Structures are given as C-alpha cells and as structure tokens.
Image (tube, rainbow over all chains, first blue to last red; front, side, top):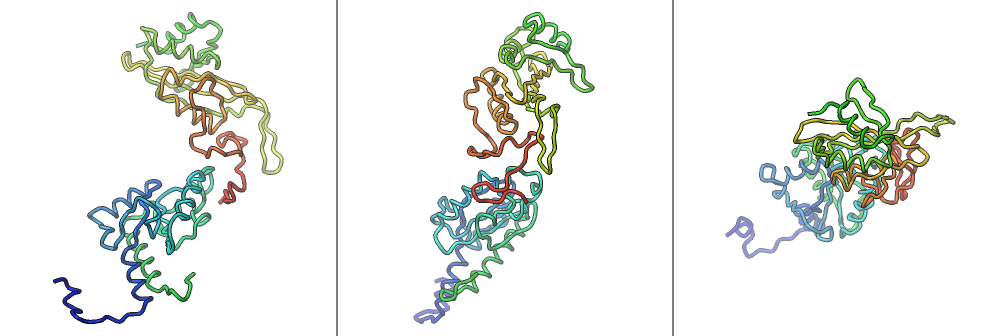
Length: 162
Length: 174
C-alpha cells in the first residue's frame, strides 16, 4: 500500500478545483523534445539521471500536441524562428515557454553582428520564464522550472493569468 | 612533396593563360587562376599522378571590397572590384599543400563548381553562394544553406550589406 493510500483510506478529500488542477499541471509539465544549440546539451544533461528532470514530471514528448512546455534551448535563427512559432502554435493550451540561455533571451553574443539571429525568442512567442546563462547550468534550468511551477501553482481557472 | 613553385610550373605547362600568377604572400603562397577553368584545374590537381590533391581542406569566399565605395548616410555601396574564392587543398599521399585563388567581378560573380571533383566542396560552395552571392556554375544543388530560402535582403558577408528592418514581421535589428 502506498503512502497516499495509507493517508486517506476510505475517505473523501475536499480540495479547490484550482488547487487540484494546478497541482496536476505543475507536477507533469511535459516538454517538447526539441533543442536548438549548445543549451540543448545542458538541457539533455538536466534530463539525464544526475539532475533527473523526471522528478519534476518533465518528460520529453515527441509531439508538440502532447506537450505543456517548450524550452527554447539555444540560438533562434531567423530561419528557425518561423518553425519555433509553428511548434508553439501546435501545442494545446495551457502552454508555457521557458527561454533558456542568453541567445534565446536577447540574441546573446549575436546581438550586434548576427545577421541571421532573432534577437530574443519573445519576439515570436510569449515567454514565461527567462533562464540566464551561456549556457545555463542544469541547476539554473531546474530553478527556472521551479519558477514556472510557482507560476502555475498560483493560476486560476476563473481568473485569467497574465 | 612539391613546393608551390613546382606546382605552379606544372599547372602553367598544362593550362597556359588560365594560370595567371604565383603570389608569394607572407603566409601561404597562392596561385591565381581563371574562375571559369577552375573545375578543370581542380580535376587535374586531383588526378595527376605527381600531385594527387585528394583533400579539399577548405573553400572560402572573400569580398575583396576593392571597388569604388560611396557612403550616403548609413548606407554604403560598392561598385566594381572583385569577389574571390580561395581553395586550400592537400595531398594525403605526398603531404604537400597548395592554395588557389580565383577572382570574379562583383557585378557578375561566377566561378565553375568543383563540387563534382571534391564532394566536400558542395556545402562550402553553397555557403559562399549564400553569404557572398558567388554563383558556382554547374553546382548540383546551389541553394542557400544558412539564411532562409526566401531571404531577399542580399548577401550578408558583402561589405556593403545592410540588414533589413523586418523579416516575416519579426524585427531583425537588436
């Protein structure tokens, strides 16, 4: 018998719909299996056993239609920006975006002479959490995810969040 | 192992006027060639038994920016002058290396493709086409490689290139 079963046997739990939904959502933020540049290597390291993204319920999905979050992990070129936007639009609501690393936050080292780089992914999709770093350490990405969970925890099905 | 001068003399015997000069630069000496004959010269360098240049190490385009430059406001335009392509190759058997250069007019930059001589030249030529607008004749698949296929603002590595304000509604400058 599991811990939860032992806690509540033969009982009814009363909770707010908001709390239940938010708890379910923030505990299973499935991500689009999608990486762009060197940040993607750190993202993969975060998914691997040492940092274990899965303990937060983050599982890479092969399709945007099964995903809740998209981590923009790397340099967004102008050519890729159109594809990123399409991936985002294919995701079902509610959906969240984590912008990972300097390139996707603001263009990073390509801000001045990067003729092929979009200077920040927030020019094409709305970003919930910006994770700074070049590339960010897995700890930083984990903290970014926890910030996003905090945001989801305070959402409401009645009141629309920003 | 042959020196650049020996290679230059061999090429000169076989291609006469299509081989222009041997320039002894401070770093690597290079041989200036005819851009429309570079495919034949390359095939010769690859197949000649004394040369056997089987490895194209690098192929790069260069904007020489040696034309008339006029600046009005923030816009610079260059007229005339040349664009160049440099070929660095080596022989894995004889361990000798050579550099070729072709120069082609900026208004109509054309050079023969060597993509069918060394397959590694394929993407290098696409890159030079994408960023400098050098047209490689008889290339099997000359498309842009880095910039979007529908990019219409020109060739980014030309010295008179100006980035557009918008691309598909996305603001491009910082």
